[in-house]
Length: 208
Image (tube, rainbow, N blue to C red):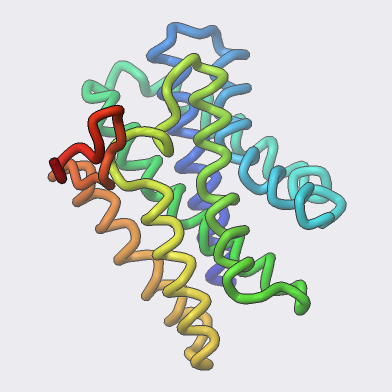
């Protein structure tokens, strides 16, 4: 039940992030709704296609599609009150990232043939790809390819979740123990510009 609520939270957060991105690009309501839907459901769709998990989540549960569109419309209508678009965008995206990572891991765990490391990777795919598709459609450099740690937070969140479940920790405890630190680490990475080493033709930046 907790994972279901987290899923609703995740698709709401990512739909909002997509809507905010669409608003920043001055799209009409259809464009905003489309970007929000891709952001909210794209990661899970990519995961399900790779795993062979059919029907796709939003096909089996079309109410999720309606839910994301409603979240996009509400965000668009409240746009005038969102004075700090960038800050709001990064916060809701961070929440969606870690929440979707946990959901992705949980679905991948249902396939007993997958090694735990593969489960974590599918969690990362779920967490990252919705935002990646959103950014590509909006002609932005995807957050996952920028300097601040992003995919690393997803991998860490998934590893903590899967590791705790392997130790037979209660699912709800494992979920919160992965979700909260993952979200906080992502926010701290944004605030303090934590980043992985960057490469150029002169070597690794920061290690010269």
